[in-house]
Image 1 (tube, rainbow over the protein chains, first blue to last red):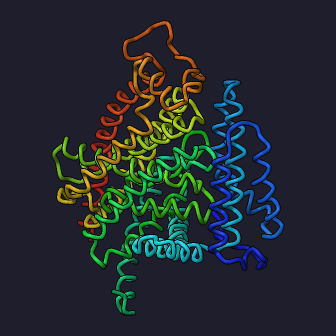
Image 2 (cartoon, each protein chain N blue to C red):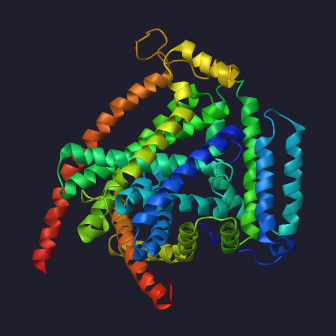
Image 3 (cartoon, chains in turn cyan, yellow):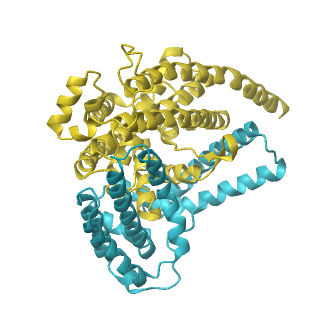
Length: 201
Length: 322
């Protein structure tokens, strides 16, 4: 399971910075990096140096970087395997590799220093449609609840009859997912009633 | 299939942001007009549900594991427009909270998995249900399994097209690689989608929006999504999928990536044969895709025939026992 989003122990300068600046800055760094020309060039050193200078300011830990980097590297490494077949693809691969790592690092800095609800506030100010803001807010609020619920169901299943047979594992997991959807729908109904009770329209 | 930043160039990223924004605004329009107020929290909870379901790992061959993507599952459970919004929100949270999937590639990811995957998957679901002309639980399970496969494969083709249009990977490599890998992954996705739909249908059939025959999208939605999917395929896939070398080179020259396109990384596996339909590995893959679609269709049908009576028997026993 993924660790919670912002588990940084101490509040640093970057944490205190306004989310507008951080989200805008991340967007700017990523766009600049994406727009840089392909091929081995020193231009990549600029955004790379910038994010590495910001790193000590954020107090981001290695464990956090390692865990999150794995998600992105899966795709990048898969791509690298294909570029091994041909000489001509190497420079393209090098630039894609450099660019994507710089961008992932930028996003890591953003997610480490900015809790999602502040990003969501920012998106609301940037005129994200209301129904999406509500959906995102509810999603982030109930995500840990549902993850907890699904792991409880898995534990219950496992304690009743653990087996290595894959067919059984599949039918168990799909039943858990189906049950999870039913419980989410029930919870949505209760949330709706609670929202109405508090004057939501 | 989450594209990170840096793999797409600015032109492709912008184009896919445009198409994705158009798709999301169609979905917003549809949802605003059709959604009852009491269903608003269901969207948020469904987004959390899809994310939580993605965290469960299914054991596959040889110690590896895979997880559900859930686009088609959401479409069958909630209807396509709600599913587009749900998948968009899931991708946004994955990008901005977990740094999974790029920010500049968010448009491409939303288009591939949200609009192409959900839209084409839901179309396949409707088509498969229409073909068997049956309203029982079996038809829904079979159609969702088949749709899960179709959605996954089409989303991967969109992804390959964007990589090729960016010049990151030549189409002759990206398309066969992405399509063949996702034809395998899609089998798992389809199986899991069908089984989850079955699990929900057995306990609470009213929660499955796609089970009835009335859960249509309205003309605006069908035309809108259809046009967008066609537009996306024309933008990202059609420049490469043309079978005639002259046409391909011509398009390549006009778009300015001929120096990349003329040099395929992997040569045709059967260059000696010159089958009329196998002039390129991409076309061979497309042909294999058509055959694969047929095989998966039959397999999904067989799965529903084999699995559902057993479950139904169990259900009858349970109710009679009560």
